[in-house]
Image 1 (cartoon, rainbow, N blue to C red):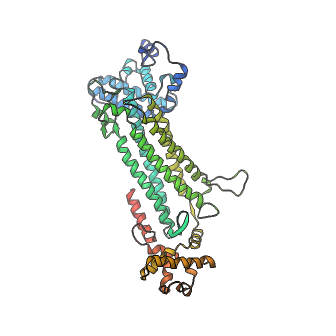
Image 2: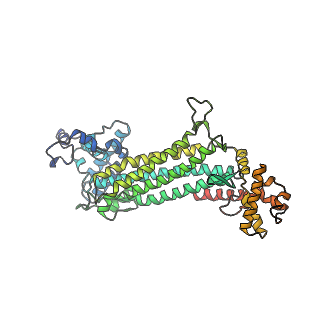
Image 3: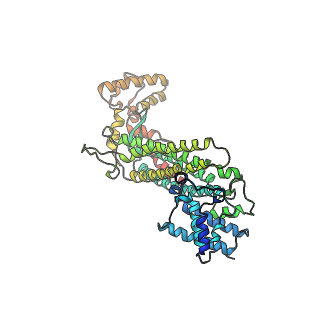
Length: 479
């Protein structure tokens, strides 16, 4: 018989509906007292895990197909379950589904609704599985989908940086160490440094996805099941690369969630570093860039203010994601095998991490597409900081002067520049030669900002020619 669902009656008999209401909780047979109302609300997760409804339905459909494949369900029962789950999905997406805290989580809410809809057949869906392997599967399916969205968002920001790097390949700015002017670089080169940060992040998420995409379903509560299940069949249905090899590990492992959060924390740390630079650069003291009004706010009392709220907020949200990583590590550190109720606490940090990261990446990509670069301000700052001092030292070394002696000569020349308020390129040849007779007229070829950046003409260097070549390579890498 075809796996294609067939339309069947979804009406449950009055007796079936009555039995569903009496056995609302799946463990009622063991208990003689109802759950305390506060405990019921305290232990419920449906208020936040309902966002995994699609993954739960997809997993249940695949499980039903597998049960029919091995003969535990009839094909008619399978089709009835699939149609019922499809109807429930439509109800959820229409905003008409009644989520019940009494049923604790997304899994039991959907299963109870299915039983209400199609009757006794709905109760057969849970054969050969537990909520332990069901939730572990749903989380992996959810995170797999979200990683795919995150990868798209990273790439979008990378493209914005590549475009800006290409546009500003010749724009000179001071490079900094210790936030002190060090050597001249190009703004395009600086943007490609940000790109490299993000490329490592992108590769980490690609790698993390491999460990997410392993299926726990079939581990049941912790020891597997006595039913003749076909885990490989279910894995193929759900697009998993493989199945978890140990049932105890399958239901209790949250390494993949911690790894994703660690990757997110590192990516947010990169965005935070970028934000710190943008906040500095957009200040009146630097005036290197101007952020679009669309990504800034004003002051309620100071009419001249234009506050870089987006980078500041992203910088702040980094602490939030870092906190989620510590939360998940702490959550797992004392748990014995296998599943424990503690693991319910993994979802809110995970969900907020995903939401925060995706939002930060989106707003950053939007913002970087509308940055105005103040080239003259950057150039003036590079000149003020004696950023070509190292070039003068290198010039002397090439002339045969030992590096330590060259360092001393340049230090004296800089001192003269400080005292007379002139850049090295503005000091006359005669004045420079009083510090070293090895300095000749061709020294001014390396003392200019353009000469300095152009001289670093190798892979990874800041020369405009190399920046343009790096831009081409970057586009290929993320294609």
